[in-house]
Image 1 (cartoon, rainbow, N blue to C red):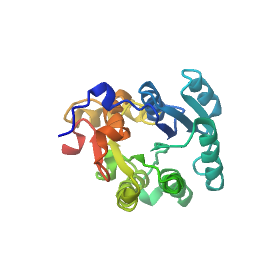
Image 2 (image 1 turned 180 degrees about the vertical axis):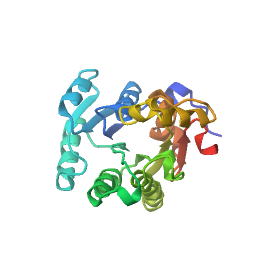
Image 3 (image 1 turned 45 degrees about the horizontal axis):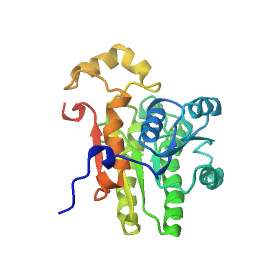
Image 4 (image 1 turned 135 degrees about the vertical axis):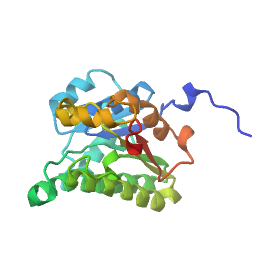
Length: 256
């Protein structure tokens, strides 16, 4: 039987080189901070370069990368720049995403397309580029895709957003199945409503407060509520035999 690994070593990410998309604010910023605090080098990627520079000032483990994940022709060069700065990537957190508004009958094509381009296409392309690099190096690695409670519960969000996150979950399974033979683990986190820039207006509204009141824990989440599951999926020691999983962190909302 294998010896017991103490928690501080189980979640030690020293030697890991992560890229977190959408890292300039919200969950992405928190993810980057948690990974760096546990020893990883972290490429913090987002469009808002000024915010990235501010984040990079917090730790020498941060490497800012200004990139728009919907700009497909630039993604390969962006990963080249990330690896030139921080070293060969071993972990990808696909966090960048946008919300959508309105009912299906009122949603214009361009709004639908922007949500799918940001939430689905960027995950497809970044994951593929990342996996190609690991496979070429014969190196193991991990991908963490950020899905959502609404991937399985329509009516809690706009249809375009819910559809995009359902696609992310199915993509997670397909990636996990295809890349397991290469030592690449792919898992998803499905948060419920968590306080962030994207959700602040809704959570402050009457509809948001009513929704929170109907959830089992009677509260919205905080970014820190995702720390543990992030570390679990990032650590090859802790989750080396996990791939294709979707972990809900929603205060029991899916049960209501």
